[in-house]
Image (tube, rainbow over all chains, first blue to last red; front, side):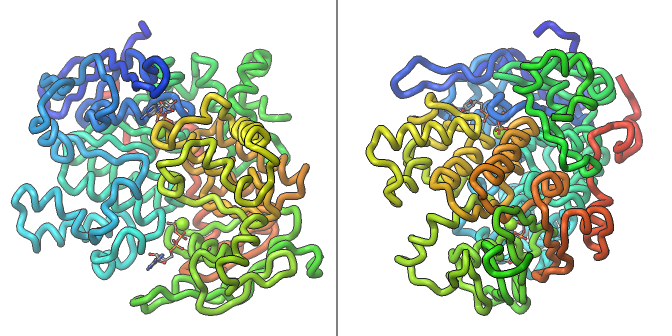
Length: 302
Length: 272
Ligand SMILES: Nc1ncnc2c1ncn2[C@@H]1O[C@H](COP(=O)(O)OP(=O)(O)OP(=O)(O)O)[C@@H](O)[C@H]1O
Ligand SMILES: Nc1ncnc2c1ncn2[C@@H]1O[C@H](COP(=O)(O)OP(=O)(O)OP(=O)(O)O)[C@@H](O)[C@H]1O
Ligand SMILES: [Mg+2]
Ligand SMILES: [Mg+2]
C-alpha cells in the first residue's frame, strides 16, 4: 500500500474528494465481522477521471457506497473528506446535502435505484425541483439531458414508468438523475454495462464534455478496459478489498506491474480475436507463472 | 441443416405492441436456434431484444407469432403447462438484482428449480447439486447461506446463471448475462457456457451488446434494429462481411483496450 500516488495536492478548486484508509466491514449473522474493504486511499480531483477496476467482489461498489455512507449496516472507519469537510460520522442532514447535489451517484443497480411507482421524468426533475428550479424549466432540462444521453423520443417518453423502459434506457435515466443536478463530483458504478458501443460512446462523450466544461471530477467503476483506456486519466486496481496498483492510464497499459493487472488485460475478448482461442481467466493466469512472463497478449492461446 | 429435428427453437412472426404505444416493440421477428448451438441477438438499446426473449419464454404474451421449442408449440400455453416447459427453457434476466428474491438464500435460489422439478432425491443431494453449480460459476459452499444483498453485482449475476443451469435446460436464454462481470469472471462464465454446450448439448439464445463476447460464443447472429431483424447469418458472415449499415456501425464503434489507439479526447492541460 506504499506505492507513490499520483494524487497531487488538495487544490483550492472546490470538489476535491480525498479518501484515506477507508475500511469497511459487515456484521455477519452467525460469524465474526467480515472486512471487505481494507485501507483504501484514493482522491478525486476536479476535472480528472479516476477509474476503479478489479475483479468481481473486490470491493469496488462497497467503496463507492461507503464514501456516501449509503449502507447503514456497514462499519466504516477511515476518512472521507470533501474539500476538507469530514464525511465519515457527519450528520444525516450534512450527508443529504452532499449526496446528489455535490456528489452525483450512479449505483450499479439501475432498477433498484429507481422508484417503480413514479414516472421517470418526475424522478429526473427531483434534484432540480428540490433546489427550487421551476417545474417547467426542470422538465426541459430533464428532457434535454435524456436526449443528450441518446434516449429516442425523450419528450414523449418522459411520463413513462421504469418498467416501460428497456434495460439500457433505464441505465441512462439513472445517469440523467445523477448529472442533472450538476454535481462537482460524479461517482459512477458500472454506468454503461447495458449499453451497446454506440450509445456507450455517446454517454462517454457527454461525460467527457461535462468533466471538462464544469471541471467535474469522476470516479468511474468499470470492468471494461476499453473504457478505461479511452476515458480514464488514472487507474486504481483493487483486489480482495485492497488497492494493488495505481498508475496513470498510459503507464498501466504499457507496463502493468501487478500480476493481477496483467491477468485482467489478458482476459479481454476482442472483436479482432479468432473465436477458436480460449480466453484465459485471471486464476488460470496466476496458476501459470510462465504465461505471465511470456506476456499475456500472446498467452491467450489454450 | 434446417430440418425440424435439428432445431431446438423456432420463432415465427413474433409481434408485440405495448398498450398505449403507436409503434410495435417487435414486429415479425423470426429466427431459428440450431440444437446444440448458440445464437446471439445484438442490437441497439431499445431495439426489442429483451421483449423478444420475454415473449419466447412466455413471460409476456405476444400479439402474433409462434414459438416452437423442441418441436412443441409453446406460445399461448397456460401457466401449468408453461411451468413444465420452464424446466427445459431457462432464462437469465438482464437485471440480476431485481430478478433474485431478496428473502431467499443462495442455496434456495439455486436449488429452487431442482426442488420444483423433483431433480434431487433429498435435501442433501440438493445441497450437493447446488454447491456443484455454484462452483461452476466461481462461487462456493461458503456462499450457501448468504442473501442477494450481501453479494456484489457480478456475484449476483453468477447466482442467476447457476440458478438457470442447475436444472440442465435444453435451451438457455441469457439476456446480457455477462455485462456486469469483470473480464476474468466473464471469461470463466463464457468458457462454462461453451463447456455446457459441448458436454450437455445445451443450446443458447444469447442477448448481448458486446460484439466481442457474441463472436466468442455464438455460431449464428441476429441483428435487431427498431423491433425488426435487419440481418441474420453465421458468425463469419456478420463479422467478416456485415451488410446492414447498423451492423457496420456497431463493429466500427467497439472500444479497443489500448489507450494509444482509443483516446477519445485531447490530453488534459496539465498531465502529472
Ligand atoms: N451488504 C453486504 N453484506 C455482507 N457482505 C457484502 C455486502 N455487500 C458486499 N459484500 C461483500 O463484499 C465484497 C465486495 O463487494 P462489492 O460489491 O464491493 O464488489 P465489486 O468489486 O463491486 O464486485 P462486482 O464487480 O461484482 O460488482 C464481496 O465479497 C461481497 O460479497
Ligand atoms: N412493459 C412495457 N411497456 C411499454 N413499453 C415497453 C415495455 N417493455 C419494453 N417497452 C419498450 O419496448 C421497446 C423495446 O424494449 P426492449 O426492452 O425489448 O429493448 P432491448 O433491445 O432489450 O434494449 P436494451 O438493450 O436497452 O435492454 C423499448 O422502446 C421499450 O421502452
Ligand atoms: Mg460492484
Ligand atoms: Mg434488454
